[in-house]
Length: 274
Image (cartoon, rainbow, N blue to C red; front, top):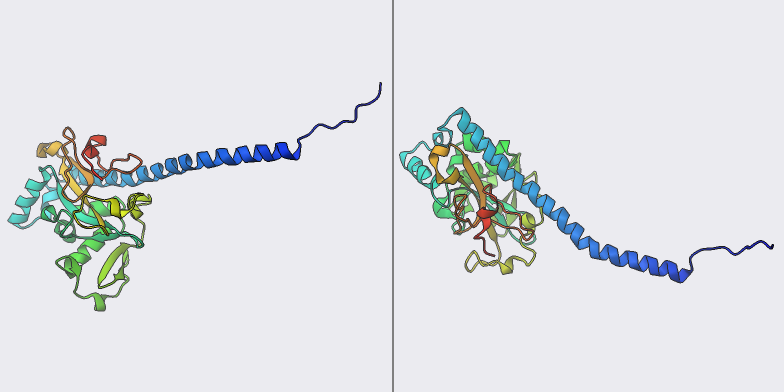
């Protein structure tokens, strides 16, 4: 019998078909892979709210009056007592997103839950300041303390020229006639907490006529709105929204990937509207 010298293999057409199919599969899978990665980053960002909650709760274990000690004035103490039991909780600082620039930390702002803001608690140091530092909100506590000293209403207007732009844990960046205070260490790593919603800021309806800056506030509340719980919950909420109470729905920030920025869990975002 003769030897069969015919070699098996793939034709160029077959190779091109396989490469094309693999390319199509890769293109189909990429959005899904990106979505999973982004959702993972959002969960890591969410963990910082839990770290803040746990830091405050540890302070309460050491001293059950820790959250009230900084509110030295009777009026501030009364306001804090009422806010910690309210649906909104108390606002500690403002987190602002704006297209084309880094997220900005503000002590307070007139269109960001200003009526429930008590950033002064951080400015005076103590448990609130220490909890932010412990929860790795690098620079945020220092920014709030700095802004309280240099702000007139919503803007930094005092001492900017003489204090410089580098402040250790944060820096000042000129933004038109205003200043942005930006932590040197990245606060959040997810795209949505750096650039806003995928549809852009123009789609946001929760801030009235404002269509350029989107502000969230860091709010704290007694768990279940019950002071006797001796524990707190934390949420990122848009202006005018509530934290709820763990049983009744709140309006905390909800990402496009369904991650709820409330330590109450999904019910904390059930009334979020975008």
